[in-house]
Length: 424
Image 1 (tube, rainbow, N blue to C red):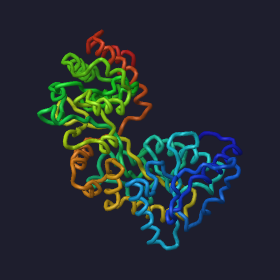
Image 2: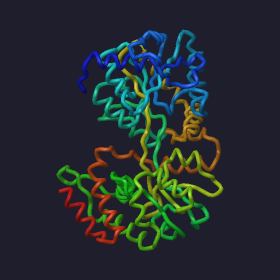
Image 3: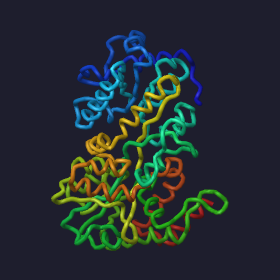
Image 4: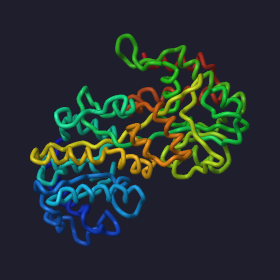
């Protein structure tokens, strides 16, 4: 656990906790973030309802804020209010914390655990990276003895995988984000599930070939059956599989489908914008943005294509976790988590959030639409995105290989050999 100086940490907690609370049963303020007109010390902890067995506190990031400003916010707000109504002596307080900014959810959780434990929440929303850090720092409680873990066939494989950290059950998944390949329906005779389908495209296909983590390429490599570890347990790639992927890129480039300028783009947001502006017939796109903006009359989506029909997508699954500071509220916290996992709520909520649901029952609660049809394919092809640590090891080497292939300065065999040699 990181060391903190007690006084600065306490001041930070007083400011952050005192300025971002919403009591579910009350009419929310126009904004979940309140800018104080006085210095931080003028925002005492007492501005929030005192912690007690009748007050359950949730910390969430802005995209999951329960309010009437968004469709998803309204669905969650109604669900929390219904839980309160079924527990007349209970008040649920939701505090909105930024995800990564200084003073964000995880940083505040760490500081409060040292300097102001009484301000800690009961339940938090965590991304995969946040969940891993929280486990390492002993900030959240194992759920093994409190809640049945996600299991097949009710829960999708990607959500089961996300719930376990170091062989222990810490997170209850509620939705997954990721990236997919959007395509113009009129440009392809059939959905481009395979590499050969993209080669038949009538215009450009873009993925962010300049991404320093090379996540798209690592997905292609793993989908081909490649591994990331050698016989001695060190980072390694398989030459034959990597050559196949790089040869595919070479073929796309030679066919005029994958242009050199793809190396100038580093995110799926950029390649999606190229697609929207008519500069490509297929492109990597952020899942939530695609679901929110696509016109199903002209546009559809598939997992990232593979050599043969199928493909896969990397996803990052958000989970609920329980904070262990007050054991008297663990039972109530778990009851709320079960309430929030009911498919009659989780389906409409994930639909409104544009996230993949973690269970088949939740997906079945989505309205019948092209969006639900696409999601039904993606959930079966979703796998946990590798950690940033893994991507940072392989990404720069793979990105350089892609660049050389599209520049035409090397062959797939030579580029693969260079990558593998660099890992030894």
